[in-house]
Structures are given as structure tokens and as C-alpha cells.
Image (cartoon, rainbow, N blue to C red):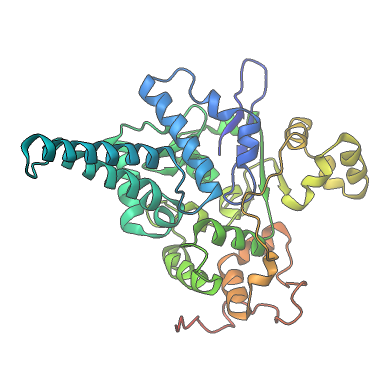
Length: 360
């Protein structure tokens, strides 16, 4: 949820409410936020922000990235340790591995495992005993090196700052009510069913995990939110929250403009925007600063698949997705009927449908 343009003197700021899996990463990079958030920081802090955006780009491409700098360093450590062991054998005529070699082997294993498996979206986003220590480590052990409160991005013990809801930002004091009222604020949302498939592709335990298995696991993981509306990152990962939690509070919209992802095509050129405004008056109310930002927004999908998003659903997963994100359908005006799948019945209201059995 970063600042794209910081308010300065009489110049209004531009604040992007970054709803997870709604296409905002390319926008932050278009406005050069990764470079801006390093300004004025210590060397350790600059390294932290470089590493944050590096990992962010990696995890957009793969659930468990293998071709990484960390694995290259781990490979070098392994080769050096092997050389030290061989040298020890040659020099003494018997096996005598130095302690340095053992240390390098341990370092190699830890670095490769943590970067390839542990510090990844599926593990951090779905496994509580990894998710919570991760937040503590980056905040206390690593001295908040991936945190930029000036630009509202990075990570600390509160969670992913760029994906904090507006109520959280105000409650934590990361932005002030004056900042929100004096700046142009906007968010991009999308069809909740389509967003759920994007969440699955980003957080699944590899391509062998089916959408049905993921949805059952996701449903159980969000029990704190379902049962008592818990939105704190410690209990409910940001990717699991409904989009309306980021933009509304107590039934009130907290951001000035909300743009549906389906409307982004209207902002590719000024002519297209003007034509769209003639058909939809709500687009005309979007501030010029926001329109300009959206017109320059790159549209890249690094998780494209051979299947259409609606093909992932069956009746059970459709009902679960609607139950979890029912409010998003109501707030943002999306139809709960999956028109591309006439073989599926419209989802029942949560109080009318039986609880999922989760039978294997």
C-alpha cells in the first residue's frame, strides 16, 4: 500500500491502496517506488529494500524459486567446502575435514532451504509456525531492514506494509487522516472469483496441489476471520482478506477512487478514457492524477496458465469462494453467478448452505 507520489508543499500525494492479487506490483515499479524507498536509509536499510523487491519479483514468477542468487552462493559454499575436505585428505593422508568445511556445508543447506522453500509465499502465507517467526525475525533480529514507513512498503512485525488495510495504516500511525484526505487515494479491485484463482496460483504448494485441496486448506486457515473478523496479520495473512477490508471500514469507503481491473483497458489512452466516460459516468469522477497513473500502468501477467480461470471451479469451491468473499460481491457490484460455467448453480447464501465437509 505504498505512496506513489509523496505529498510535498502544495503538491498532492498519490497513495495506492494495494489490494493483494489485484495487479498493483507493476504500478509500484512504474512509479519507481523500489528506488525511492531506499533514499535516506542506512546501508543496511538500503540492502534490505533491495532484497525485499528482489524477493518480490522472484515470488511473482515461481512458488519455489530455484534460479536465485542465494542458491548460487550456496553452490559456491558447497564447492569450497568440498575443496577443503579434499585438501584435508591429501595433506594428511586420511580423512580430516576442517571445521570451516562443516560450517560452509551447514550455511549452504540453511541458505538454500530458506530461500527456496521457507521464505516463499506458500510457506509464509499458509503455515503459521513459519509465518509468525518470519515476521519476528525481519523486525527484531534483522532490525527492520525491510521496512520503509516513509513510503509504506516493505515488511515488519505488522505484516507486509504494502498490503496493509487502510484501517490498519491509520491505527498504526503509518499514515494520518490528514494524509488520506489531502491526497489522491485509489485502489484496484477485481472479480472475487478470478482473484481467488490468482491467490491459488501464488500460494499453492506447487502445480500438483489441486484447486479444491487448496480451497479447503484456505477455508480452514481463515477460521479466525470467519469466526470473529480477525484481520491482524498474526492470525490472518493479508492475501486471505476480502478486498473490501482494504478500502472500507464500518460501511464507509475510505479511499477516494476504486477502479475495477476490468476497467483498466479504458485508461490505456486518453481517447479510450473519454469514450468510456460517455458510457459510464463513474469513470469521469476519477481524479486526473489517478487516471494518468493508470494510463501508464503496465499490464503484465507472470502467472499465465493454459486454463481459463473459471475452469478451476466446481460447485464446492464456488460455494466456498462466495462464502469467504461474499461482501466483495456486494460492495463492488460483482455478480455471484459464474456465467462462463452454466453447469454450476449460483452459490447459496452462507446461512443456507451446509458447512464444507473437507473429506479427502
